[in-house]
Image (tube, rainbow, N blue to C red; front, side, top):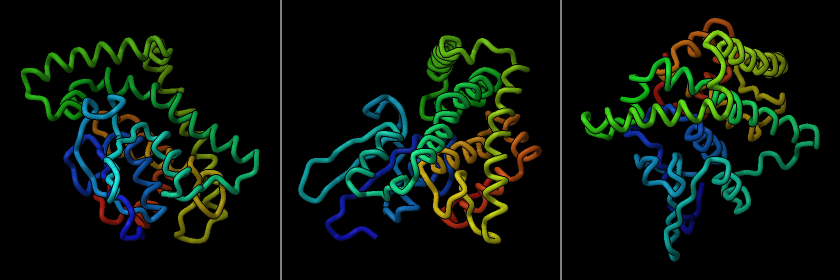
Length: 259
């Protein structure tokens, strides 16, 4: 636990849903690292427009004798906290090969899967995504802002490349990603003690890749704008769901679990 001189940390998650996971994998990624490092924090609502980089999550740090500081971008938040000793440096004992594997898993999810799944959320299930993402905006204005967000996401996905695939091709590529992740987790689970958490690189403790992976798994299990991916995970990759369930039971027992 933090000492009396430790700063107060508020994590702005974008939604007023206490005791619930949010749809952003990056929010849960940060929460995972804070909880597994036993760092106390409180949840705030906030929103992308209020954040330093125009996105969530972002953090407000309030020291006892210094100005309040804002940090944003999940990767930069965790890098800063690791350098300052706020969270554990979970990758410090990894070999060079393991460091590369850890980075590869994170890149696969954050730089590939994120964009592939953008089509399911912002195109195929646009209205569900709009009303959830823009929940704080009054309805008449939400129609206009939602249309602008839709156009911006379609343009972003096309420029990135994920938006140039058909629905069938996108589904196949998403299945490939989760199939690879499932293979890693299956090997890890076989070596883990009964009912214990198991980790994507097969070690005894989580690494940075686990924070990202848990965030993405949970995001898809709770997101109503990602029904195909949710059913894919439950139907074809149960070890991925079990991975998240064990982490939930140990580190997030106060949160509602997905159904």
